[in-house]
Length: 613
Image 1 (cartoon, rainbow, N blue to C red):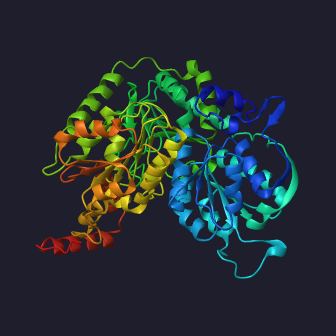
Image 2: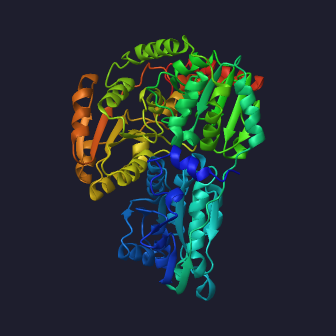
Image 3: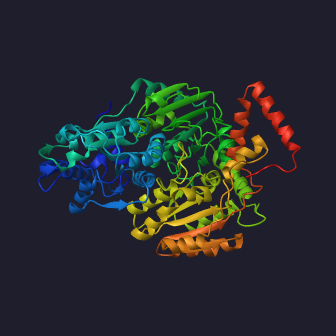
């Protein structure tokens, strides 16, 4: 363990972590900020603890078991935002957390309130996002009766989708359990935690004097680090950096290490922003056939990958199609993530920020001479990509790549962009050039459809002066569209761009190749203008490429929320991720399975009228 972590992280993340857990231990006006004290109800103890943890907004829907808590939030002036569905509460807390680096907080009732939120909490768990869920429960102790409403086992429901669940049985434990929930949400690999509180404890009273918890240490395997430095010190190795979300607070250090090693830098999907993509050594996301062409070409010359804060998960690797290199050093704060997918030369159990800091202290030992061919080669690959991306494939409607390139050109470097589970997420990850950390987001590892609309609202609530946009497919739109009414009601000026082709086109791409037909993918035709009018938001429609510039600009200049429908035409444009994942999937089939797929494809190829729906 390194006792100096605070100094290292606060220097590396200056201006990024704000008032989160790393900065809450301080004295203001002669008193310790972080202490919960006084004669308080359980609800007051909850709210005071949240305030001391730096929470500025709680997302959720009040209910019978939590009305005391919501009324107390109002009395004590803790910000809150009413949502239309608890999935959206979790999505908003997720967007808040990803964009700020601080835990998002939800407050939900037991039973259906909790079950509605499970998909969003699962997304946060698999995507390493800190959320603290304050979950109501039925009465306990002498107040307990059989057959209470919402009498599901809240704790059992929460365990699979959280890092840890804290079940409160005594009113005196409320502050410490909430403090622990915040600490565990942020320590190690971040993720959601939950505190389950029976509703009778919220109205009971006790005397509290609860100081803040001591900050936990972080892992740093010194012997493994030394082994990694020995590999990097061998200048015969051509090194490439692969960085993930674990490096998001340390972009300056990633840049410095890349320059020391003369290494191209690729990111995972969730790691976009950990390296400015305008830097000459940045090659974009992925380094296999599923990601950027520039990354794939640059890493063909790499024989040693240094992977930091990244898991090699299925979506980011295109169904595990990332190529194996002779040498791989894998660094992660979660020991269970190390060496799970790729064959590693050296695993280092360490916090990414500490590893980067310690590696830079040995810069002279691992430094490479300037590679005069590397940057020109990367630039040539990027020009090749740009030429391919500029081709207009659309014959009717808007080409998705033209839309994404125009949107990127018209938005600022600090715009917060949220992309949903749409086929366009892969094109967006390629061409939506990300310059600053925590500005580009998508639900990577749980792929929760409909996530981007509430997540964008959560980020807008956290950053009232920032431009926030969401790119959502029409199928994802159907799952969380009612939350646009929240944007109108709360005055959150998110710009909603909906890619409309009346189909689950992503599923069509996967089904058509495997089954030679599509099943259950056609959606209803919606009147988006009427929907926007009903919600009270402005409306734009883009039906051709020549309207992109003026209408996107008009949407972005509008003061309030805007719903923009894009009549999209996906046909013909290749998707590298789909091609790579499909090829890897087919290679992993056994001979009998391959024969079955080939036979079925041959039979259905003769069907001139496939039953598509």
